[in-house]
Length: 115
Image (tube, rainbow, N blue to C red):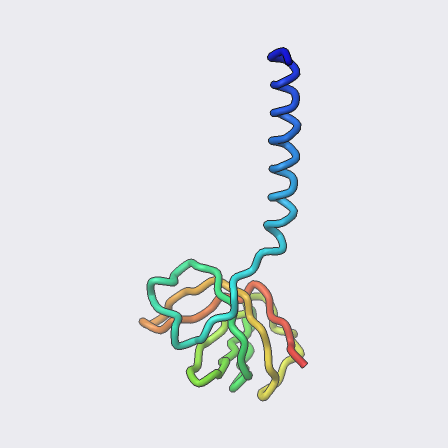
């Protein structure tokens, strides 16, 4: 084979690989974790938790949800004040770990009701 053929095959293979990785990356999610295992070292990381809603408080631009497993954590849903959730609902939260007043919290990217 000449160099031009090898170059074309390499380019096509690389583009196909990048395309496959792009589409697969949208499907990847972290495994669910326990609230008590979330620490300051997880800052900025994406976490997925599942738990029961203990309380919900709405403000003008955000919703504050307290999720309970054995431990509690506050979830901030920015710009989602019209959520149709209530205390006692079981939800799955996907979001970024943050910290406020030395307590971990999660800034929600996705909130899904589990029935």
